[in-house]
Image (cartoon, rainbow, N blue to C red; front, top):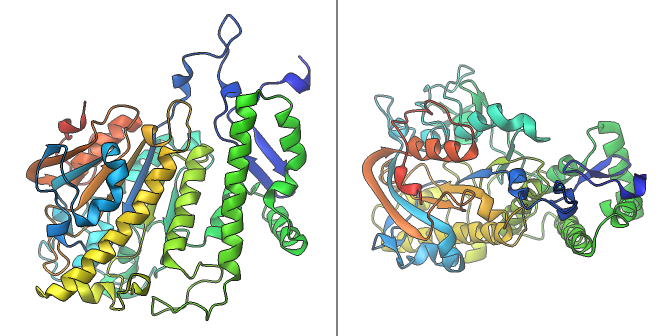
Length: 456
């Protein structure tokens, strides 16, 4: 068989100087049957994806919890942006992170709420180098299955935070700014700059070549696609009409994201009022919504190209006091969370909560409209969204606000409000997710079992 008719594989790349552009699933990548056609059992190539999203400072609980259980529930105010996706998600009430409580360690609930979010482990109270928590659920999965992809996992965030110093009542800043822990003593840093993520995702791993490629693209005002165009044309001659259409849509999507990153990087630093009380890293989008959405796009691209199957995303660090002037909330989020029952503060908190959920809706819509080996990415994905606190004023860690979106390859019965028994460890949900991901373990954090009610 000539090179012209060599079938592309799942690991086929479009290459250029410093670049290695992974491809989405194409029908021609499916195995052939004995009769020469594409195998109907392409499901063998379906891989589960798993993402965890953290929001700080709890929520306005009365506008979060649906008034009825089961199917056909009415979405409360905060969750209304998910209306078009209601059949693709489950609201879960009653989950608890006991190890987020003081348990004799005194104040510091915000720091604990982040460190415990994916670990279910009590963090050691220290602001020194002797930090200690537990391995997070995403890294449990990454250590088992991460070798199957280019990146074992990816960590995203909109606030870079600090890795040392005292950020909350004697707790190290490492606890407040990290939800992913490779081990009890190793919190993982997160990518905050969409441009850096883009270059990492589509770079060839050679730093010198990648830097040279970026300089040439910026100097010549060229797109990443201009540098892989020769490979793209060669590949297109080997693809059928449907695959060529999918490839064109994918490349157009990559270019659209690249253009938005370029626009975000070209906005003068003083043209947008800062919403945080610290300088943003160079290249970070000044508009918060666009910052979140570009990082969501990076996550979708990483799943679409099977560059990773595991991701975490902190919309903001624990205790974040970011303001939200773009939705007419000038007060700091953390300050508002200590509302003391003030109705005006409640109203502002729920607007912040609704804004965050709107960004989740953007991500889920992208996953739902992006094809996978079978169905969409959302069909083969599990997205866990929530906070490590319920009410930010009471600093309570029970009845946490949690959503589980995606169908887990058809193993999750979505479209419901599920009320579990009070004090059910949130790690029981993680155990159920790991089972579906094919990375079952004996325990995670303080887990006591699984949540059987997820099953169809």
